Image 1 (cartoon, rainbow, N blue to C red):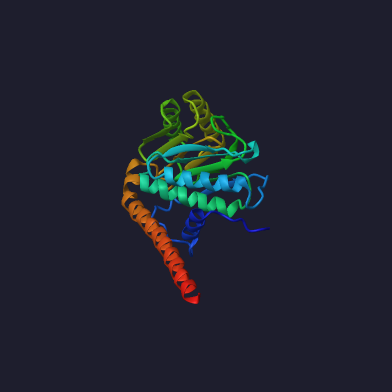
Image 2 (cartoon, rainbow, N blue to C red; image 1 turned 45 degrees about the horizontal axis):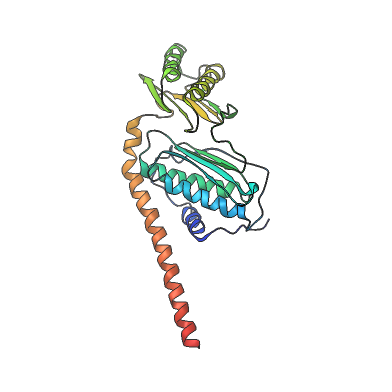
Length: 284
């Protein structure tokens, strides 16, 4: 397989994120890999599509510094060169955490899907997807991840509490929904390209599947292609706004470190170019 060539900014970005398992300061749940997938269609190295894809991914990372959701479409001279993409951060993440999570998701996509036209990565704190076929604004209830916790030691009577929390999530408005009762917490979210009605329909389907598939489980995760619903008891997942606030300072430090590393690499490149010019001048 030929190694793909990327533009300078994206090459440096991926290199920084992959250096010796760079220790992110995000909470382990935010950075935890849940699933990823790639399309079978591949693009030609050094093609206009590759250039457009690099531009798209750069736009996603830049946008995540100030918005928890965005989508982009990069057009080319040919319809075959068009690329669509979006990212979605969990609703309780601070912006530094969101930007770091999106950068990490894109890095994983680069590792999982080299030279493929489309890819998707879901981390615990964010989701990234890109493709040459449009998917923006299209509801998709395909199950992409299902996990159910063990029922050992979990009181069956708590299922009523779980169902009550899930009903609350289904009836709530908005793209990001959090609820809970006692030790049981729940969360649901749709991608920002869905309408209110589409989001309601998608979340309802995810909750319906959770109830039928995770009977008695101390936690349940149901990820559909455009939304998810999750619940947990104490000791399993944690979905509180306080959790996001707690990781904010660490996220800011991590974001500053990444920016510092990028700046350092850029300075090094400029310095080496300067030395090269001096040597070439002395050789004449």
